[in-house]
Image (cartoon, rainbow, N blue to C red; front, side, top):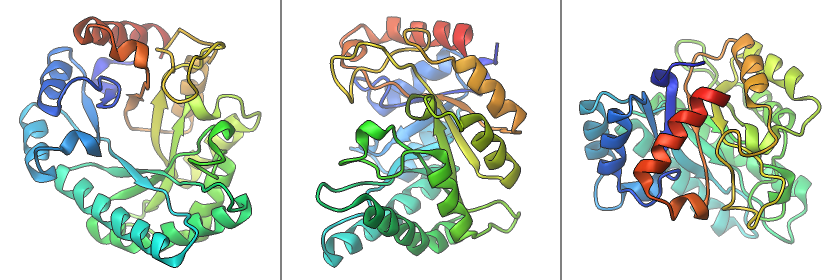
Length: 278
């Protein structure tokens, strides 16, 4: 059983809570980290949010989310680059180790073209991240999202972009790496090998957990808490540990059902299922 001090919860997981409430509740539950979604910064600034989080004794594994690089015209691609640079600056101000990249896809743009735009887009902002001392974490998304959310569906595809860019921070760590989310990659028969390769190359920047329900009412907002579905989370976590991953195990659950529950009870369930299944 991993310690709660190594657990981080995404603010989107307890979406009804504002940032200050989430910070206080996570701290009181003994959780060690909070991954902040950008919409949680509404009404404050990244600098003020970082101060609030540090004073509560929490760490910030990541800011979510950058990405969405493909577009049908140069103006759209340039706007995406500008937004990603702002996201990197916000991450530095809040004290986040990394920006999670949901890479993007656009109906009508062939996947191979979208992947080329993604690689070019990440390369274009990577030096900005290097200067800000922020990592970029490519998050492969399940193939069901390939049409309009991410043309990057596997860790192998993400790794190839990391290898192509190959930019390093002063400590030698790759600027561009991978956020491995079990919800998106649990089905991949190359997953164990790709986790090992990513670990050896220093590309494992993040690890996200939730569960895949066999019956879903919504392809985006009906994820399960750990243990509610069919993913062998503990086995994948073992692969992550053997690969030398030192970071947080981040709970990221999109669930209209759980957002409608009492959030204090929900947080207690997050803690219980994290301890039992991660």
